Length: 265
Image (cartoon, rainbow, N blue to C red; front, side):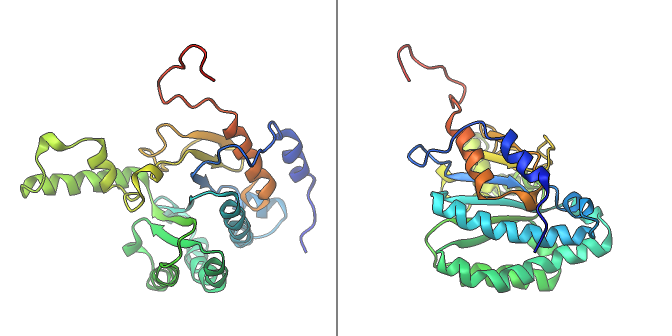
C-alpha cells in the first residue's frame, strides 16, 4: 500500500472552490491531459515507469466515476506524437501499458457498459499495442454507455494537417466543391469525427500536475472549452478532484461569444 503524502491533502484543501451539485449540468465531454506521472514517481524515489503504472490505476477510477456522473465522452491524452522523444525504455513501457491495461480492465468496462475508442496514428504503434487496442475496441463495440476515448500517438497539429490533406484530395478528385468547405466539413475529417456532432468538442478540459498549457491537444475542438488546472499529479487525481473540476465548470458562465439579455439568468 502506498504511503499517504501530505501534498494530496493540500491539493484538496486549496482547490475546493465550489461544491459539486449532481442536479446541475455535467459536461457531456471531458478531456484530460494526464500529466505528472514521472514527477509523482521521482518524488517517491521510484523509477518514472512506476508513475505510469500508477497512472493507469487512476484511469480506472476516473473512468468509472465519470461514467457514474453521467459523462458521455471521456477523452484521455495517453501518448502524444512528441512522446517518442522520451528514453527508449520509458517508451517501450508505455507501449506495453495498453496491452496490460486492456487485458485486465476490459471485463470491467463491459460490466460498466463503457465503449472503448482509440484515436491517433495507430498504424505507427508497435504491433502488440495495435492488437491490444483493436481487441479492446472490438470487445466493447456493443456497449452503449460512456465512450472512453484514448488519444494514443496523437498530435493536434498533425491531425489538422491530415484533415486538410484529405479535404484537398476530395477537392482534387471532384468529390467536394471548394465553396462547400466550412467548419463542419473540417470537423468531420478530424479524429473526433466518429462522435456525434454535439459531442465532438470537450466542454471541460482538465490538466494535472500544475502545468497550464495545451501541449498540442485538441486545438480545434477546445475552442470554447472550459479549463481546470490542478497541481495534483495524475496518480493523485481522484474522484473528489474530478467532482471539484466539474463543480468549477458548473459555476462558469458559458456564452460562446454572445452576451446575456437583460434579466436573463
